[in-house]
Length: 258
Ligand code: HPA
Picture (spheres, helix red, strand yellow):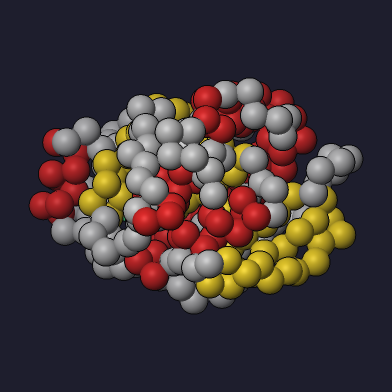
């Protein structure tokens, strides 16, 4: 699991911290167990345990490489988002279906030519439908209401958006706005891992809200939703088969594996 803002810890049992070395730098993770699940679960805090790393400086390549190195096949990511659409309301928990990429400065690929080759990875289905089905089943078991089918506009950050930008994202088909799903979802696909995002609507986007946005507002909303989402993640892991039964594992076939 990759925990976003407000989900810097997950209740893993018998966990211990580990440092994973990757070609892109070191990554700290917790390795532990959930319920009776026989496979271990990896927890990674995207922004660090104390929210020390802003979205544009997250080492996405190191994070995803480390998960692959540890044998992870399926990634559940959480993300705090603002809403641009009347359909997605404050407090909603939403499965992301598509993204619009407005990031500017982030390394977007493991395939930079040379010995690694070049890969034009297919993004027809960026978020894994098989993992999404498991999340949906877990939500039904827990009685948690989930919305789905959202398009996530990913901005560079760390600043919030102008109302004019929000208007543009909405006109282009965006439903939610956040700062981290890209390139995380892309890099996971490049390494053949399944990836799904559970978005939590923490605020109305700039210009829709009738007040200026603050990180404190995002954190306060997360406090009320964090427990539900942590329970949802735990329940999903319990019903997940670590074997991949979907096309995600074949995403880098054209370029070959590292
Ligand atoms: N904009 C960008 N990222 C966010 C927001 C927002 O309104 N809320 C939570 N993450």
